Image (cartoon, rainbow, N blue to C red; front, side, top):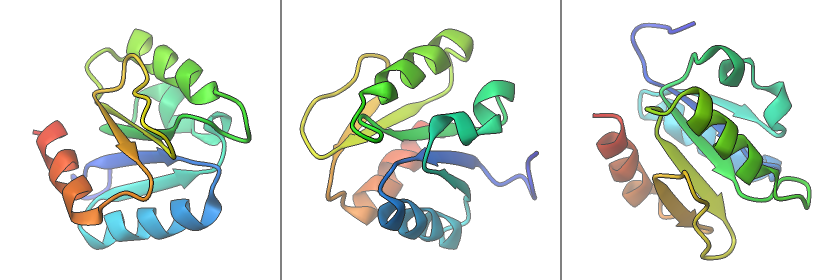
Length: 116
């Protein structure tokens, strides 16, 4: 459920240090960031209670980020998606692809653009 009309960003990444730090960075900038290390943990993906999805292409060695992106695009075609990985390979269905390490301020600019 939305709190204070903040935009909800769901971040799914199996690198826990990155996930926790980046979600804190987003919260510090006024977003309602929700971090999960596994896609099946995110209730928001089932009920559509999110404004933007950021997801790692590979989670625990599997390319299940692609499966999640396909699911979200089919169920919520207007929800923006940012794919993230350690290599330069955009996943079909993602609006933007970021290569780790990401540039924080540049990423905030992309997020603002996708959410307007």
